[in-house]
Length: 203
Image (cartoon, rainbow, N blue to C red; front, side, top):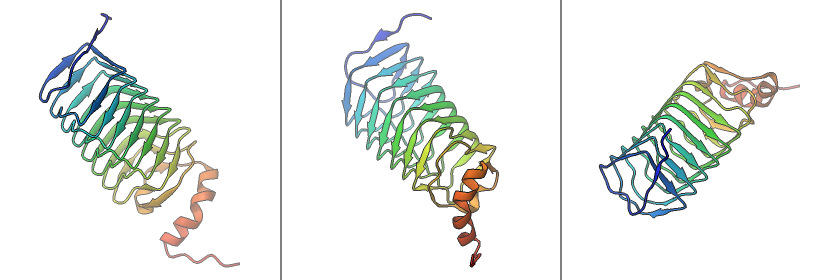
């Protein structure tokens, strides 16, 4: 693989960025919608606010990078990895993710409404108040993750594997059809599932 060129300067909208490394940079209020990042690396980068709406990330490695209140609406992610990243207050509704891995990351108040996940793995991540409402999840796993306040209302789940995760789901129990859980998780979820179905448990 050819060595990537280090990027210097500001991001511009509707640009193609190929084979570049973005390292230890801060992009506050970046206006970079509609860009295509191909075979790029983001290392120790910080995005504060800004718009990356409809940008595409292909064969891209994102490591130790922060997205705070960043607009990632309708972005496309393919064959990419986000490792050690923090996303807080991010708008990513209607995003499309295919063959993407989130590893050792923190996602806080991320809006994935109506997003499409295909062959996506969350590994050892903390997901707090993440909104998957009306999202489509196909072959998605959450090994070693902690979910708190997750919303799956009207989500479509196919071959979704929740085994090995700590589950804190606050809405959308009816959308868990098609997921795989372990016996310990079943015990945890049972009272919520019973309440959702209108079942009274009395000894």
